[in-house]
Image 1 (cartoon, helix red, strand yellow):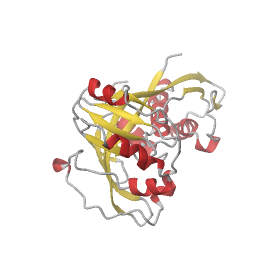
Image 2 (cartoon, one colour; image 1 turned 90 degrees about the vertical axis):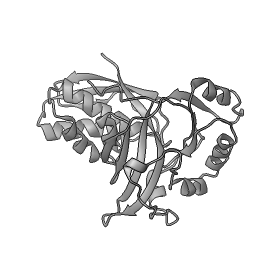
Image 3 (spheres, helix red, strand yellow; image 1 turned 60 degrees about the horizontal axis):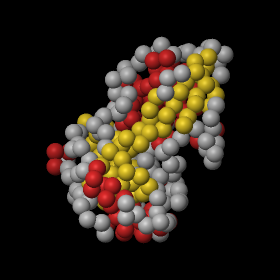
Image 4 (tube, one colour; image 1 turned 45 degrees about the horizontal axis):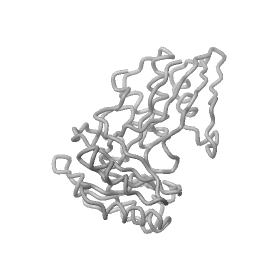
Length: 278
């Protein structure tokens, strides 16, 4: 079986600019793919059974976006007799704000669209992905992007080559808990795409996440003390935090000084999703 990548993402900033009547929050963010990957394989069957062969500890069936994605695609495409065995090698941390579950779902849709001979256009897959989660469409879109709406209105952006020190605090953050917090500000003034700056932007979810898990503030504080970073922030709803550097050597120099109680990794930014041309 072939192996297919599902990259993580960083939110270089994340502004909450409003809230719809249905409760969904209106956002502005920049998604950056990074070279830190889950890996998936698919064994196509004809017994009508969709099965995750390598379930992840702590992830229940209802939370398994790979299975949900496969079932939704099969249902909407009318391929009732087809099935699949899904194998997932998990590397992206759960509950870290790096989009691992959404990326896995997107890769499942992209690959099964081809292997099941459905052959929908990307726009149609993106609309389907949005039903699974607000972060799924950008991974199907396949480009680093300035995003608005609930995260589904996407415009490709060219980002400079960058390296990141990503730290993974030993806590998980519930996205729903952060977004429903009364302490979350929802009135950041919207910016125009032409005028956005990842350096000036911030993450409106960070203060809420820090109150829920103070260790995030400690790890952010350490990163902000290091020289050479062009950006330090939390990704998504947390708990992962990152510092951006213009070169690999600068990032690795900082990572080499990491205290023993902290853990993480050094990774490069990607110019596009590895499956953009699949």
